[in-house]
Image (cartoon, rainbow, N blue to C red):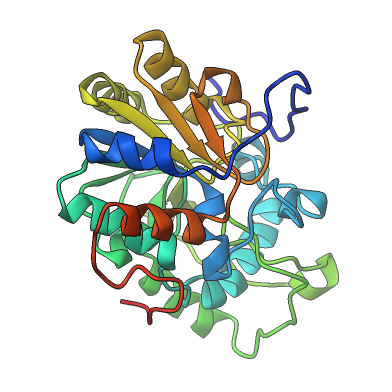
Length: 302
């Protein structure tokens, strides 16, 4: 089953407009048991662009699909050249006020869990624990032949050694850690094989067109069943991999609250959509709840 095939979505104009009222979000959190579902929008304030928001990377960049990656060596060369360059910037990203606020909510016992569609690891870097990475993580690499897993930093070192002097200027960095490079800039970039079997290496992330592991999906469904409400942060919910949990919560009569600047595919299921930047909104909610900590927009990274 293909779980991430949708790259675009047209908002339904009949849906009600968003709100700047933080009270519903604060009220939901005050009762505890809230499950967070986050998307690329929560990481934009860390310098990682969104896919679909204002200036989103889909306007200039088509994410790699699983079918393209496995189809041939040239596609993998292009991917790894762009990903290797992007990793240098992506790996330096630090948690922002939104990530720190989510971690603070968890420390105060207000959350039942965190599911993220992001592959950047910033929730964990902010202090959140037991985060379910729905689409995997860029800091791991897996072999498609033998299944061996290894740290991304190890692959980065090997790619550096195999491509001495590779330092093109990228046109931008995308939410999947991919840098915008022309074919000329990719050139004859050398891809390295698995050190165990010589097979094809792939980042341990779910590409568009690839299925999210069934056991991971069921774990997330169980988290939805156990939660009192679902709080969506920075996701357009365009792809079914995240939208299905919104639909599940709504069908079970659990309140769905969304914080996202733009309309989402799940708005019809939500009791509110707050149209404020994530850092501003979640910092405001934390202040309403009297939660102290380093979650203010001007706080230094943890």
